Image (tube, rainbow, N blue to C red; front, side, top):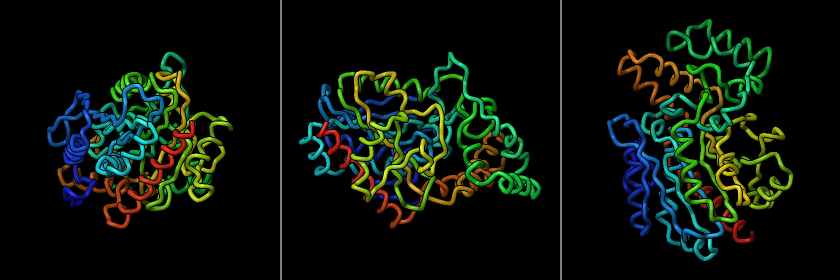
Length: 367
């Protein structure tokens, strides 16, 4: 990846953070940085950075967040930088009396280390549970766990054959649901939701309390990559299974059928049905607000290729003795699975990002 300063996208977390901070300061916005306890892959400081564009007591608040899944922040950060550099977009939000809160690097550790998980090896978007209650049990994942992270990488032939046999007997949708739905039993496994709140979970809750408690209406666009056709930004309903809420989400972002909104509840989404999702924190921390949100999921590579990259990432995490060459290959594999470094892909990402935030402002203005 080669990203110059004119390009809103970046080749490293440090570069992405610098561009975000510079764009926010150039826009005249104050930045709040909440430092992460770990350091980045190059020893750099990590932080969840916030820039708010609008009045502290605004009744309408739009949240645009990046990096929930670490490496996916390379896409989301580019969109945020592009928006901060766009005075026309900022003026349109201000005219509609909509404050915009940019949250850069929800999971800065994964962002820097080119991993999907947090430093606790937790999938942040499976970590929002009441941990005082029994956690969901993913029984199907139990059967697949021994196959997911083999002792050697690349996996031996028999490992691939066993997975192919399972898919042949149960189907690809069942495989994706079992793996990506989340699990809380295997800390060394894939899509691990944890048994306690992560640093990112607790820090995000503080941010929502500080910035959302005075808003009557909150919209949230959380940017992801890795599912669906390449370059297509799927708008996935990120809220409760409520027909009235879903109707509002589809009115805001559906584009009268041109940009359909999907849902994990009716099977229309490329995502499996999940538990412990991040958006639930809005109801905990900002109960006074009417909430409307989506996950903006950009396609990159076929699902099996993305899952293979995550398996490689998890193997690398469990094998610190891996050679520098192995480590480099895994990082490149993960990056390629969640960020497509071509001008055409990036142009499509930015165009759809601008469209989605414009739709959100129009929806909030009608609230």
